[in-house]
Image (cartoon, rainbow, N blue to C red):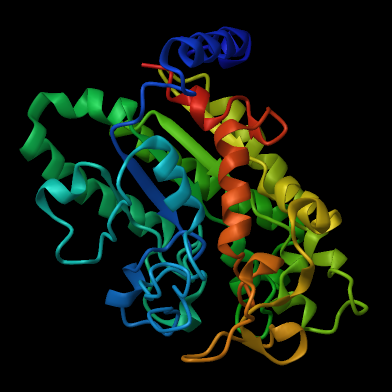
Length: 364
């Protein structure tokens, strides 16, 4: 039988309180490693090493990350950078970097690739990228290295490590919503397409589970109809999101939550759904509460909503990034990533279901 996460949530909460009083901090058995799978929201430079036009290895990307572009599609840290800091693990290096070998991989690895999707064809107009299925294969090659280095200890290591999955956005904005390039919107209605994605996603998650990973945080897709790129299409009134785009995401996000419930029946499995849509929606609906004043345009970009053309090399970004929800045409600022990370790590079931990342670390 798998761990009954639902009945034991009260116990985990109690244990956290005990740790807080005994250690003086919000203590937990920190994960030994963080394995990151996803798209440009969490890419830390894999596409730098691929023949792709989806790259961010130039200034002003990284302007708030030691004033240095790394391949992160942000002004600063990504969502997983901040999660890693909370877990006390080093930033997982990019898999495609030839220097990511040996002891450098003992804290985990990042396989995320800009333009990547759940479907292999998603984002192909950008050139090379690591799709979800390819990222799973890449993880298995890392696992071969880990087995060589760790021997039989690798089983316990993987069971305590955390995998973060951030997929789905490109399957919509760089596939389903591009009928001039991709046929998916002619072939499937929104519910059918969501179910296609979920079936592919479920198979790959089971593949990762089958080789030893046990703890998964699976982020849902945010309100894509509100990103500058979609607002710039002119399909909505000024100041409004493209409602149609947001509406078609419902089946997918609800499907991930249902998938999590099914997968948690497996022995030792801890699958968690991150309600990205709700968290970003809260920020957009009440920005001043979170310290933001600009919600409908990118800090760095060109054209309508600074979203028709994304941030170009040596463009001048907005001077105060902390006031902006979006950094460029597609991606949030570091300030938003920080909020999303805290809600995933500490949040209630509405944010992180059925438990949060901090609670996840308490399971052995």
